[in-house]
Structures are given as structure tokens and as C-alpha cells.
Length: 236
Ligand code: CA
Image (cartoon, rainbow, N blue to C red):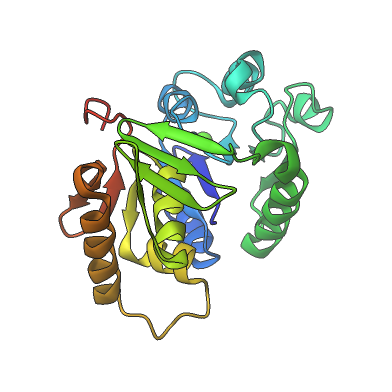
């Protein structure tokens, strides 16, 4: 399953470059241009798996963002990689006083940053990615260990691939999943033979099988799909 990385950076060009490179590595990304926006995204459910955080931001500073992430239970263990210009409160960052997991000094090589990100995520995985054994969402119940699904108490038989697709949707509740992301997460990197059209066909089939719970998977025109963040659609 691909990791979701939140980029908090007010320099648009840099944010876009980071996003491009992260996507190319198979990560999902989200950009926040201010500290406030970054905190809002970080506190969402499900939140990001990691934050790339610029220090010099308009309004709430990167240091303050990091401090608040560390103060909050939900984000206490969320990995944070800081981007800093030389001299920008660098002593605090180097001393990891702000609670960051790592930092890079601008200007940096993208390749170097990607290696650091991979290392941080690898370290974070065991405690950060413990999947629940069973999820109840509205009329839908999913048993991840037994690979079983119920809608309104009646068991629904899904293929392994359909189950994987449903799990992917559930892991990204409230987030739009592009067809490309689904291809990557459900079929894996090597499935270049699968067309994005095929994704639509499989989603259609999964929805049919889920009956009334099929409505939880919403089509976002021209982009892809989104699993509702609340069963009644209120949070989407
Ligand atoms: Ca900045």
C-alpha cells in the first residue's frame, strides 16, 4: 500500500517538484501552503504517513507546527522531515529539539531526500501501520485477517483482488484515489498491462457486489474514486 506524504511548503515551485518526484516513487501526496493548513491535513482521519515540513512558513512557523504535532496524541509518532535553509533556527533542528525525525538543508538533491524519506518510513512502519483486524463502517463490516466482508450482516464473497481494492479504499477514507493510484496499490508496480479503464470495470463490479454499501465508493469525475469518510456521506 502506498504511503501518503503531506508536504508543508509555501514555495510553490519546490512543493510541486517534491510532489512530482514523490508521485514518481509511488507515494501519494498532498500539499499545504501554510502551517495552519498543514496541521489541518495532519489531523484528518486517516492522516498522512509522514510530513515534509518547511520551517519558514507564513503564519504558524514550521517549528510551531512540529511542536503541535508532537503535543497531539494522534500525531505524536507521525514522522516529520524538516526542510530548512542554512541559519534558519538550524541549531534547534540539528539538536532535534523540535522533535523532527530528520532534516535536510536547502538546497538539497532530490535523490538524497528520497533516500531519507524511504529510511524514515521504513523505521516508522511497525508501530505506525498496525492495521485493525476488523472494521465496521455503516452497514459494512470487514475482517482483514479472515478476508471476509458483510453488508447488513450478510456475507459477500469477494475475489482477492476485490478485497484488496476495498481495503485500499478503506485505508484512504475521505481521500480521492486516482485510477493510477488504484492501479499501483491494487495491482502493484508491475501491472502495466492493466488499463485505467479496467479499474473502472472492477470498481463497478465491487460496487455491485457490495449492494447498498456500494454507495460508499463515490466517483470523482475526471479524477477517480473516493471512499466516504462517514457512512452517511457527511464528512466527504
Ligand atoms: Ca518557506
